[in-house]
Image (cartoon, rainbow, N blue to C red; front, top):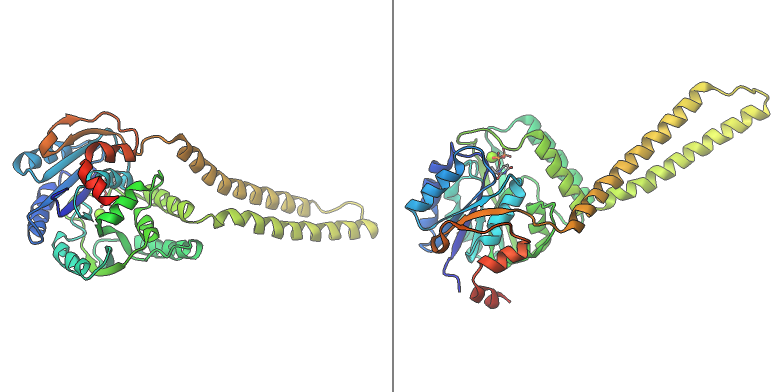
Length: 339
Ligand code: UDP
Ligand code: MG
């Protein structure tokens, strides 16, 4: 059986400026909860000194685990890599940039003691975030909740404390386009919101430019709803009505002897229909592309190295699948207990 009561999973992408301070504050917060903890840093293909800093943290403290991915896989997959290797009975997922204060951990753990499976951070104030980011985020969650049958709470990120059964189920969900906060909502169980005010980044710059945010939003929409596919049906109906009106108009004009029909109406009709068709094809394409990627069943992430006390510096090679990663590195006894 694992003797870790707590794992902290920290995805890091070019976070050299914050790591030392994060590790210091996180270790203090963990120590307030238990002595049996590990902090799992996942280096998501950083190009700065992030990995060497993780290594030196691991040299100094055996409770630090380092996972180096071969390349940048993005926040959600880096987090998934960490979750698949975390051994604790409870797992905290937290960003490295100190926007989510590590000091909240003891309070979240207390909340979990009341019988919750998930305690998720809910932002009541956010320092250092632009009005644009806040407005688009709010719009996005409203749209997502309209489309999805799983309610996904607004103003949350991935900052959350999860119980072992929840983490196991999450690890068993094989999808590649991962929207972790939505997947955790889907799992269910007793979930509690934990209101907190989000700090500004301690140092460094955001690793989530608009492009990545849009792509996360599309991942969320496509993996939690197929309703956009139905848009085709409605648009088809509307354009059929439109086409019928044009038909009536054309026939009347012809019957009245106004032989040369208007150029404008043809242009309007052609551009309207081709626009709708391209839009609908685009929506189909988004889903189809994702089906292709899922069908390939490539590993979700590629692990280069794992730095962990009992297997320091061991080279893992390319891990074939999330399940294999779990099989290879989680101890067998714990797995049988959880069955
Ligand atoms: N991150 C990552 N891989 C990426 C982008 C980000 O592991 O490709 C990590 C990053 O190091 C941080 C967390 O994900 O710990 C959240 O990123 P960030 O703070 O830049 O996003 P924001 O808070 O600005 O939305
Ligand atoms: Mg941040």
